[in-house]
Image (cartoon, rainbow, N blue to C red; front, side, top):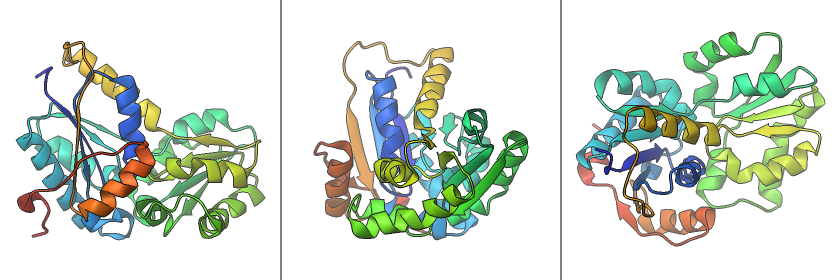
Amino acid sequence: MSGSAIGVFDSGVGGLSVFREVRNALPGEDLLYVADSGFAPYGERSGEFIAQRAEAIVEFFLAEGTKAIVVACNTATAHAVQKLRSRFPVTIVAIEPAVKPAASLTRSGVIGLLATRQTVASQRLADLLQAHGKGVRVLVQPCPGLAEVVERGELGGAATEALVASFIDPLIAQGADTIVLGCTHYPFLAGTIRKIAGPDVTVVDPSPAVARELHRRLDTAKLLSTRGQPGTERFWTSGNPAHVRSVVAQLLGKDVAMHPLPTEFASVA
């Protein structure tokens, strides 16, 4: 199994922020990525629908023989990761908003959390805030439309800046000095977020921590690749391969081959 690949998935291209950190931490591993763009954004879907899509993608990865899976989507973590872990006998590492690190970084005691509507509404986030948000004030900011901006590859420009500002400005006005990126799409807008928030605001991206945890889990299980050569990368999407390929090239800075997700894993019952 040490020679098998690692699967990474998201509702779309946002999980590439995690994918690139996994690549940096594990340069010798073969990586598979699924952008479920045909059903994006998850943040506007029901919890049941999100869980159904997550299970289908994990089934696809297992059919490809993966040794570990990364849920690179906060919304999928919130609504599906418990079901995935109970159903599938494979290492599953999942991302979630970095409330605990932010609580240790804030000086003002006020944290802004940017997330999708479904993450905001989830019990998992409520539990996370209860466990790690004590002693600080966490301003939870739903960001409708923000993930879609990244899906379209619109990382700059006046319209994107105005949308980001509409979510950031109220947090800064209430004293937030730390901003948590609670959706994996948002790191691709980190430059704009920092520009609007100002130099005194810390922006927290949990993606590197996910990559470190994956490395730790694989090392403990003796599943790290021992080949001593660069790993390969393969990409699939349930959306339009040509469009997703162009956005992936923009986000990763390189062209990739984009395959359509097989029909049995790309449909909804």
